[in-house]
Amino acid sequence: LFCSSRPATDGRPGDGNGARPDRAERRLTTFATSNFRVLRRPFESAQYASHEYRAALVAAGITASMSRKADCYDNAPMESFFHTLKTELVHHRQYQTRTEAERDIFAFIEGFYNQTRLHSAIGYIPPIQMELKAA
Image (cartoon, rainbow, N blue to C red; front, side, top):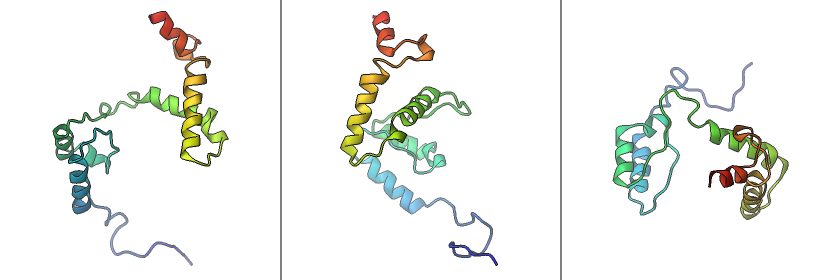
C-alpha cells in the first residue's frame, strides 16, 4: 500500500511545472515600475537570464548580479563568509526578534570578524590589519 499527501495527477511527474506567464509577468511589472533600486532574487532561474527580465532591469536602472556561466567560483568568497557567519554565530543562537538578530550579526561582523578573527586568505591576520597595511 502506498500513501501520499500529494494528489494523483495524470501524465508524467513534472508535467504541470511549466512557466506561469500571467503571475510572473504581473510580478515583473510591479517590480520594474518601482521607484526603488533593489537587487532581487530571480523568480525562476531561467527567467532571471531572459532577455525580457534583463531589459526590465536596465529600464529600471538596475544592474543584475549574475556570475559567469559555469563558474562556480564567482561567488565563493561570499559563500565562505556566510558559512562562517552561520557556523560561528547564527546556528548557536535562537533570536526572538529580527532586531536582536541584526544587532548580534552586526556586532559579530564589525566587532569580531573584521577586527579580531584571523583570515587564512590574507596571511592569518584580521581584515582591519590588511586594510591598514594597504592605506
